[in-house]
Image 1: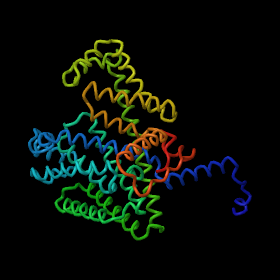
Image 2: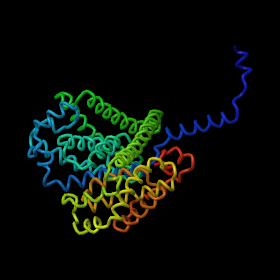
Image 3: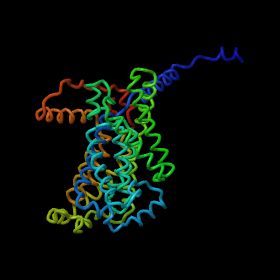
Amino acid sequence: MVDAVRRAPEATPAVARARAAAGRAVARVSGRALGPYQSAVVRIGFSATWLFFLLREFPHRGELYGPDGPWSFGLAERLIASNHAFSVLMWSDSGVWFQTVYAVSVLSSLLLMLGWRTRATSVVFMVGVLSLQNRSVFMGDGGDNVIHLMAIYLVLTRCAQVWSLDARRARLRGSASAGAAGPVLWGVLGAVFAYGAVTEGFGLGWLAAFAALWVVGALWWMVDRYEPEGEGRAVLDVLANLVHNAGLLVIMAEVCLIYATAGWYKIQGSRWQDGTALYYPLGLDYFSPWPGLSGVLAGSGTMVMLLSYGTVAVQVAFPFTVFNRRIKNVLLALMMLEHAGIAVLLGLPFFSLAMIAADAVFLPTVFLLWLGARASGGVRRVLPAPDAAPEAPEAPDAAAAAAAAPADPSPSPR
């Protein structure tokens, strides 16, 4: 048998090239967090959307999610017992506890948007989103479902390596974990998780998930503090990159699934088939913040038909065009304009902001770099320049762009 193996022909050049390409792809997926600018803009977009929503509804917070709402604590308790959802608001029906959770949700949204201690604040952000939304499940307009999912996915991503205070700290101090704030924050989170475990405030699955997040966060801090250049840090980086890239892929797949299902369900509706679907919401007071503008649009049968058919065509086509950069970018611009129109015409600004933030995961890196340069220029004109200027981002090569995501061949490493 040994002789047979020795006599076996060498791998053909095509097989060797395929193996080499596979090896390079694995090295890139495990060696870097792909789509850094895309994940950063998704982080900023969703945290800002939730922050603006919480601030707008601040005067009505008790009626929406608190003890003053029609969905009482007892009803919420019965529903959560049946669907096994998670909400720290079920730990107590105290008004003080509700106000505390709401305030922490606002603060975590702001800190996540700024990218401060993102590993911890992304967990607090997720807890705030799930707790408030699961407390009153009927308060939402569709965008809340997207925020609900993305809040979970963001915990898995390394979404603060650019455009964040963590990135600035790493650049100036050599480590994003520098300072005492990180250990203190994780200590507080550990105490909260321990209290939830003792009082059975978590289900078994959520308890395991939060325990794993806490252990990984503590382990990362210890390795980053005491062995920043060792093998332990290299192993953690590889695992974090794999989880990040998988999470980014899930976000992209989720966006495609949203548009695919929305488009194909619309095709089955008779009002979408005859091109009159847009006409009916324009005549409802609830969806007409600008009655005059809605009346002008509803009065044009041609525009109603074009917008109705165009909406279906773009939503159905988008998942099939993600591998073609030019067509994908055109459809992406059309969908963002569509959501901007929904925000203005139908009075659904937070739904539109959530969908635009989700769409941003497909934005080209070149455009995001241009946008970041313009934003940085505006900040420098307002604030004094820091002591150390950031280095220019590394230009992506073709292989990294191809491996970055199935939807956009252009993301660069972050």
